[in-house]
Image (cartoon, protein in one colour):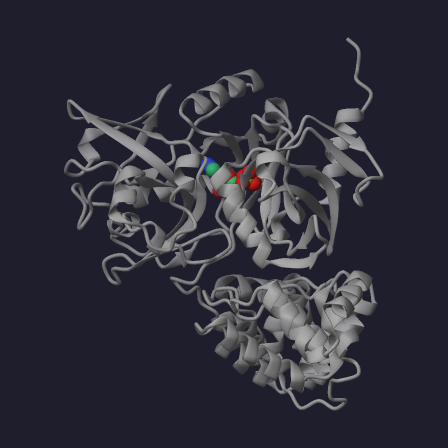
Length: 585
Ligand code: AMP
């Protein structure tokens, strides 16, 4: 563990990417393979490989308490150290200096063992004992990085992509091969093992292990979206939650559904797996889960998306009652395919993947096996209309192929935009027909066009008690954008959430407070919000140097993590665009 911590220190001390990669590579080469493989996970800031569902279930407060307890210095000293560094790991290092052992007795593999133990369910008291026993064995420097890994962020300027580069350098393999293997397996430790043995070519996609999601960039307006590509596919932007479905087909009748954060969410949508079993061959599809209502009238079936707020009532629950599933039915709208015919198809152009998607939907036998419903759809003004011929039995559609639209001018795109809004969807997605599927990357091959042009995804960094009837809830949120590893505050908002949401958030913030300042609490930066605003100004009130005017919280983005939030660069771009001298006609 000592070498691991020393490597982290060295990586943190340099801003040069090549140097970081060199240090990581050297470390990997110097350790036994098993240890290096495990360390690769930790260096990516995770306790477990990306594909795993397990989490440590250790919140900031628990960690804080354990550090405070074994330091024997009390909260005041920990708070002071925290204020100096803004990081609990670094604070732990300072307050444990006098009490911690000077020599190391912990290994990286032992730490992995303790994480396994922590991830098993247990009482808070039990977890606290495990944590304290662990931290008592660590040197101050080791404790610093153990706390950081548990917190989910090393903050040493090392992303998983640099760890991939480190593996490539250490074992003299091409970076692209390492990236591809990691993408296929979702497991950086397994990737390291294969690289060390020069067996990267053997990596096979594993069905039921999630692949990273391709992300979209915002388009300012229809003109920009239209002019970006020579040829584009336009789709509605559905307002639900992103989901990757892995269907085993007839040979392995099993379905797993993964969220954008690569967590399994199959159990939250019990009505979807049986319908998705209808695909006869193994496939991985990308799409959106929506709250959805269908109507059958004279043999014709129409359906439309319900507002996101409806779907929200079903989120955050692991088990869904039959009653709730009936009240708020869901459907899966598929818009892309990642795996079919025993092959990964990410590198094929979108146009071809769309054709494949047609074939996949067409391959479902009429009436489907074990299926209630499966449908291709056609758009109209207010709804989707389904062809009765391919709807099996009488149930509502649950699996829908996203219809493709085409636009022939920016003005036309604006019209289609309005139609999409009338169908209850959020806006449009405009996609380059020639683009491959690039997992985990936010490129310009997919552009999103929404009504609120100025929205940002931000993370809550501090909260305050409200006023008047909100005096007993934490309702005023300070939020930040990202600049590399730094979080920079950009505004404060206190409207937009429902009373129920505010009450739930209050509980969460109380449990995840890093520093209680009385009226204000610094909280763990994990709650991502989507905020809209009317204007942006330069301001030295916030660390970002910008302030949003009239920010409103549109919604909590439980599907996003702090890594997904918008960056200072985006903020600057929005500002510059807004404040550029306007051309006069
Ligand atoms: P945003 O969440 O605002 O960053 O917008 C990107 C998200 O839009 C994706 O992650 C999807 O969840 C969602 N989305 C809705 N409809 C589509 C679509 N047709 N194609 C791609 N993404 C879509």
